Amino acid sequence: MRRRQQEKTQQTQTELLDAAQRLFEEKGFFATTIAEITARAGYAKGSFYRHWAGKDELILQLIEQKLAAYRARRAERLQSARSLEEALDAVWDFLDSIVDDRNWSRVFLEFTIHASRDERLKAELAKRIYRLSDAMFADIVGGYVPQGYPAEKMGALNTALFEGFLIHSILGTGTLQTRDVRLAARALALALKDGSEQEPATATESSSGG
Image (cartoon, rainbow, N blue to C red; front, side, top):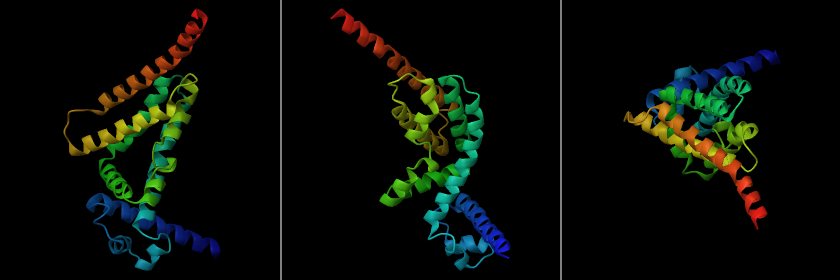
């Protein structure tokens, strides 16, 4: 009996999440009401509040689920990566899949702007389960770069390039393509790698010359 109730609870949550995602993509996060979500899923409003305090908590769960699916595909690519270039390709394949999901991209950006005005949400959204965090990027490329490589800074640059391109893509200007941004990110990463490899040698030469 308890298992059946748990399955029913899970089904209700899944149907509410599905209804919310469709409405967010159709109308936007702000314009969608909780009453519309529950009506679309075929439940009373009380069912919503048994799972979430409000729309913020629901969309955070949606973001986590979406990124978990993207990351599962990225993880398969990373297993076969043998160089920094291949690791970066795996990361950008992951980011490309988000750009290609145009409706969801709009929802994510809308919520990001909303979260930026709320300290609690901003801190929550900065966690690695909701985005390509600087620390996560450092973990991904750590095995392919020399000691002293600013991996977290490179992660921040990749995120800035990606989120900037996401806005650019949604506006439909057409000036840049994903390949352009991917090549720019790779060039930055490799330039930093070359600089990190040269610095120890330069320091050694200076020391021996003195």
